[in-house]
Amino acid sequence: MWICMVYNETDTSVDYRLCQNFGLILSILSLIYLLVCFPLGLCYNVLLVVVNLSNKVSMTMPDVYFVNMAIAGLVLNLVAPVELLSSTFTRWHVWQYSDEVYITLLILFNISSLVIMYSTTLLSLDYYIERALPRTYMSSVYNTKHVCGFIWGGAVLTSFSSLLFYVCNHISTKMVECSKMQNKEAADSIMMFIGYVVPALAVLYAFVLILRIRKESTPLDQDSARLDPSIHRLLLASVCVQFVLWTPYYMTLLVHTVAVAPGYISSAHYLPIYYFLRCVSKLLAFSSSFAMPLMYRQMNKNFSNKLQRLLSRLHCRDQSCPREHSTVQQVVT
Image 1 (tube, rainbow, N blue to C red):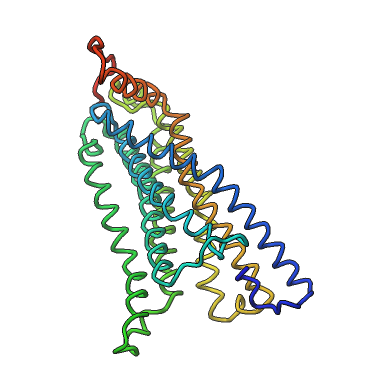
Image 2: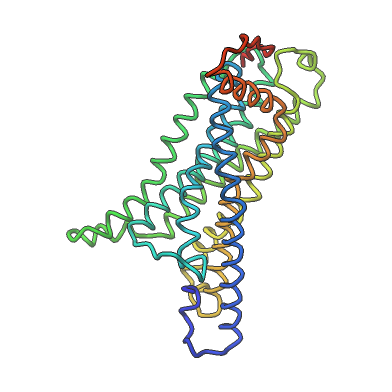
């Protein structure tokens, strides 16, 4: 495995054996993910998107954000098998991708991570707005759809540094100027700040405001326009799961940014440990692509009704079925 290349093939030291054990553990974890988590994530993300888009009338503000996260999860599902079947993650690799493929995967991964983190963040803030000002329509479905569009645009622009890194590797002229843009530590620090620090502070601020509202006795407690109470549990669970799964990956970016300059992780002793932890943290990040739709499926009580209506329409498409009378009212948020 490539993380053990710092040692000689005939090396029998403790560090080399430890590196070999890391490689075996990582290979097993990658195989488990591909056999269990990948198909579950793919199926449930597709199901979440299709069910909600086929019931646009009954979509709420949280549904729009979860659809946005599901689309980002599908992008992660596209990236995951390409990376996990390479020599980076498994001994039984299928291929070794080129630099062009690596940069493409990095861009897609960064875009997905930013979309997921900021969708979670803005869901928290919009939930507070809906609780505080339920009839202002500031957090309406219409506005949320436009916000999600801006999230994808901002994620693409933020990942532009990776694109510059790719372009600079293929430019034969002006290499002096281009080499200044090949600072991977700077790119990691930007991703750490924009992709983790900012969302974490925003979510913390939103939760403080939400807790303040919940402690106050206001007419909102009897307001029929407020969001379903289960949304609060879903919001809390989604925020906790996303940050638990993504924090290790961003911590490895922080370690790479801080420790690479003094050379702490450049020695033969620390380098395999660092790359092993970085690969495991990336596996956890990939896991968010199936954890989120599963949680949404279990905790959103309206999802089953939407799925049943979709299946009924598909069943009645080629048959003469009585017209379905929906009992679900349109939720205006």
